[in-house]
Structures are given as structure tokens and as C-alpha cells.
Length: 451
Length: 180
Image (cartoon, rainbow over all chains, first blue to last red):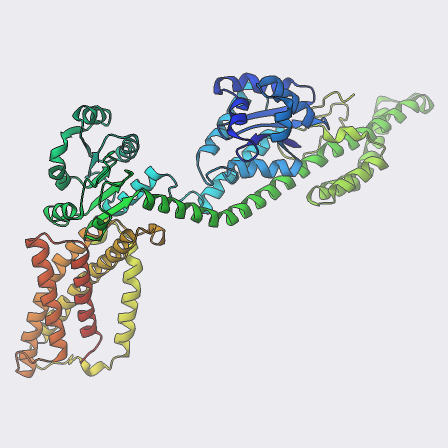
């Protein structure tokens, strides 16, 4: 079963996380090294700015020590820091962690879409490094489909949670698809640039930049594929622009209520949307009272973002419920895989006994014609198969039960089977596929040397 | 027509209940209120009813768009997140739909009122009586006329025309639903 070992934004401060994080280009090599560590059977390495996690399938009981050692050997961190900030999940806890992680329930900003892409990249890198196997491959495939389900069936990712995206979404509420709209950027600050870029990428037709320093305006206009105008033509331009982003460093109001009123009249009532992201504010808050003038300042946008975040938190419950369902489904599937090696081994063992006995009695049977020898062999094989039928059915049924493990143990004990063989990884595919009876000497299950 | 051009399925949400209410109320009304077997000019009466039905249908859409506009405008002005109305069209779309459907509704309504007056003249031999229903229709017509003049002439748009349109529609609805 899988093991998750690592740290995230909750368990470790940035100062530690940034040292532990693997550079993107090194991940493939690192995951291959991780796969090479003794005891590790499958490995995946996820490293983003908020988390670094080693996700492995390992046989060894002391996986924690091994993984901590690996991390400390790979990255410039002390053992003390690793021990203090890392968490480890095993088995179904690890499965749940991976499902929550890909569904963005474990993210700093819940519902953000980035993490799914990052996990997919890590999965692809591990695939290229050849470190994936049936356990992790199955786990992540399921996790991706669970994440998709969570995104489509809950509102966890519906409303924007960044300032720029919230502004664009508001602009859409006013103007629709934005294709006929012009945005006027007042001031050439960084925030204004971000918001304008966002609007531009969302299809705004043209960008006009006005700044006290014409040079800066010109630079920004060039960057945004727009047009720069002198600052004193501000109100003229405003009559034609639909969205006005202000972010000047001016200590005074740049646009008063009267200005907004005049502009609105000149626009003959076409709505105008002021996005005031300057501190101190550039637009008189009273401008919002004017008909067809909509004014959002930084606080308003923050409020919108916060409300959207709260909305997401409301959706977390239903998202968690979906994750729980998916985890349960995955574990049931895993369990059904678990009994397969036992069934295979049971058949193999009994057939070996039968053929061994046949060999032993060979001399006592005297000279047999080939037909007779074949008949005796078939008798033995058929007897074994008849005896095996009921235990096989019981094991298959056990796969679906929570108490399946007990039943498996019982049967293993009754037939004196080797305990360690139960963790042999099996080929994926039909989990209950049973080998063709009669050819026990060629086990279809890939086995590793246990001892 | 509006649906083909703007594809605003949301409007159905507003329109469908209205249609149901109107049907329900009209089912309650006694049948002899409308003189179906009017002695004179029945074809004119039928024409009047047809025109009025189309006018009111167009006005329905104007009303729905105006209502959507008001709701969205209030949400935006209050700077509350618009999460409450996730599927409303944008303000500009509401305004455009309202304007277009009004330009259809108004001539139809005018024609409807005129033919109604003529039909009434031919039935009761009085061209115009200041009954409540007639007054309501005229009030609605005047409001709509003002809205149209403001919209086309002065480039008025947005919240106030939307509000006025809603008032006018209510007048028409009242008149239809039997304030006699």
C-alpha cells in the first residue's frame, strides 16, 4: 500500500519548504533515485512551492526512516528539520491524502486548479523515470478522476479568488463578453498592469494608458499592445472607455464624484466600471452612487474574493464526501487485488502437492500405457480442482468484505502458505482472474524473489 | 425572435411562471366578460386581440429583461458578490434585450389600443369611455412612450428605463387580469 512522506504549507515554514523543494528539471532523476532506494517498489515525487511529497509504495516497515534519509541526502536540510516538519501517511490515510491533494482540498487556496496539473506533471515524470507500478498508477488514475468529479459536481472552483480575476468577472457581469470594450489604465503601476493583462487576455478590444509620466505610459501601452495618451486627456478618454483601472501614486483623489457624473452624462448612460486599486484611493467612493457608474476599490474586491472563498469553504463538505466515496471505492478495488495472489498461490501449492504425490507413487503404479498415465494425472488434477473450488469462492467473496483479511489469513494458515507472498504485486487487469487450471507450473503472476 | 438573437435561456425562468399565472387567472374569469359574439365587426375584434397578445408577449420579455437588470444592478452597486445570480446575463445584454423587445412591443400596443377603441366603438357605439381598464392601458402606453423617447432621443438607459418599464408592464398586467 502507498506511503506519503513530505511537508506542506501547514507543516513547514517557507524557509524550510524552499530548501526541500526539488527543481523542476531534477525531478525525473530524483524520482528514479528514490525508486532505487532499498525497499521502495514504486515512487512518485511531487514538488511545488507549497509542498514536497514523496509518494511511494514500499515493503519495508521502516519506510519513514528510509524516506527521511533520502530527503535529507537529496536536499540541503537537516535531519532535525525533516523530523520536525514532515508528516507521513500510510495505507488508507495515504490514499485519502492523495485524493484530497489532487482535488485541491489540501491546497492553500482551496479549489485552485493548479495542483491537479502539478500532480499530473509529477505522475508523468515518474512514468518517464519508470518508477510507477500497479499501486501508484492505480492510485493516481483514480485520484485524477475523483478530482474531476469534485470540480464538476461541487462549486469548489466556481468563483474567482484572485483580485484580478474577480475584477474581470465583475466586468463580465456588466459588459458581457468584453469584445467591444475598451479599458483605460490610469497610472502605470504593477497592479494595474496585472489587471489590464488579465482583461486583455480575456478579450478586451483595446487598451489605453494614461500616466503622468508619458514615457512610462508609453512603455506599458507597448507591452499591452495599446495606446498611450497624455494625462490631461484623461476625462476625454474616459468618455470612450468602459473599464477604468486606476492605480496612481497620487495622494489626492484623481477622479471626483462630479467628474464621474460628467463622464457618465457624456457617455449617455452607457455603464462605466471603475476599478480603483490605488492606495490611497484615486476615485471618490461617492461615485458609486451615480447611475450606471460602478466603482470597486481594493477593499471591495478583497471582499468579493473573500466571499468567494467562503463560498468554496461551504462546498468543501460535499467535496470531502465525494473524496470519501472515491477513497472507499479505491480501497475496495485494492482489496479485491489483494486476494488474487493468495488464490493463485493456493492453486499452485495444491497442484504441486498432487503432482509430487503422483511422482512418488509412480513406481508403485507399475507400467502404465501413456493413456493410463494421463488418466491418473487427470484424476489427481481434477481432485485438487474440486477441493479448491469452495476455498476459491470464499476468497473471492472475501475480497468485497471488510473482514476479507481475516479470511485470507485463515486460509493461508490452513494450507500452510508462506505469509510474505500476500504482498506480491500483481498485474493489473481483471483483479479476480484466475490462472488456467492444469498448468500450475507456469504461474501467470509476476513474482519477486521474496527471500 | 429575442431568443434566437440573444439565446438567453434564463429569461424562461421569469417568463414561464408569468404565463402560468396569467393562464390560471384567465381560467378563473367568467367567460362572458369578453363579448365573443360581438354583433358587429368580429374580425376587427379578433385582430385587436391578436395584436394585444403579441404586444403583451413582447412586453413580457421587456419586463423580464428589466427585472434581471434591476437585480444585477443592485447586486453590483451593493458590491456584494454576484454569486446570488450566477446565471443572469450581463447588464449590457439585459439592456439590449429590453430595448429591442420594447421597440417591438410599443407599436403593437399602440395598434392594439387603437383597434380596441375602434372595436369598442363599433360594439357599444362609444369610442372612448374612461373606464379603469382603458385608463390603465393608456397609462402603460404613456409610460412606454416616455421610455422610448428617453431611450431613443436622449440616450437614456440602464436602471430608470428598466424601472419604468416594470411599472408599465404591471399596469398592462393589471388591466389584463381583470381590473374592470
